[in-house]
Length: 158
Image (cartoon, rainbow, N blue to C red; front, side, top):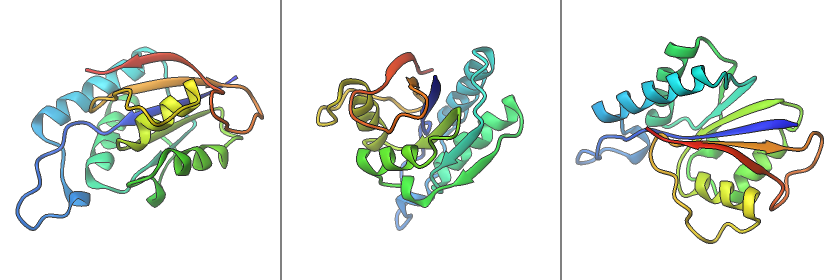
């Protein structure tokens, strides 16, 4: 059994005039949420073997808050996560099938649609994944990523 952990970035500041969405930082509320997520992950011993993180500022800041609590992690910025569809994210997860516990730090609607796709087999309905939400999915070893393949063992948000 392997695990996939999905972490949506915490609350971000609203964009300032002329500021790109990509560059929005976490708000004060978001920083507190990210710290709460980190404590929850630490308490549940959910330390990933590899982290793939969107390069947007708010996802990087969410991940930084996590590593300040749980310690350094093997992490990589993955440009394809930003504005990704569920299909793109599923392909990314499938390309890391050899990782026992993989953490994706990203955005909606891609993350919530991936969660729905892997769990129920359908990604069309919004199921809801609030800012700083964490979903932990169990996947069979060496099985390709397909719709309906995962069971959800935890879903939490601050």
